[in-house]
Image (cartoon, rainbow, N blue to C red; front, side):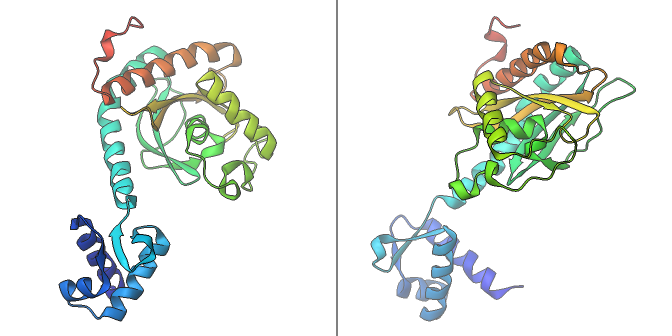
Length: 257
């Protein structure tokens, strides 16, 4: 086992249990480690954002980054459970493959899916990934993602063209994300696989934060421009139902049934 990793985790656990900032000497005694070792490990954790040096005085406390990581995992589990009824409803309404996705870096990960009953359908698998800028659920999540530093923003990243429809131009992607935020849903016009189109909408939690996206995808022979509005209405309704469940409300209360 990696001793450096173990020591770092022990320090994090100790700091997480403390209500106030604590110094290097006290941590060294508590954990049975050398002061220089504790100090080096703390500096690494500070650089990574997991620990805060309180006012630079040599007293340390855990940051909220651990909570943020845990919250992401809990949100994923909660979303899967909350989404299932709406996913089944969406499948019945559209008869297209339904995806539930979360953002992981610059990719989307499919955390759940329901296959279309049609003989020709979009292929994917739970746990599968796709470039976020190429698929509808991914573009939705990029559109509502908290803004990182400009140099890390997805519109500034180099993008590969998987099909002639893939958006690779930074200015065009910026416009696309703005349009998605305005209209409330995203469309994949064969940007990942030329023969597959999709429509997706954002899912919010009880605080209004976008935590996932739900969408449908299918062959371009069935999902055509003329039918996008109807599909968009269905996916946004499914997203609303899931959001209501996450917020602790009864999704059936709305008049949108």
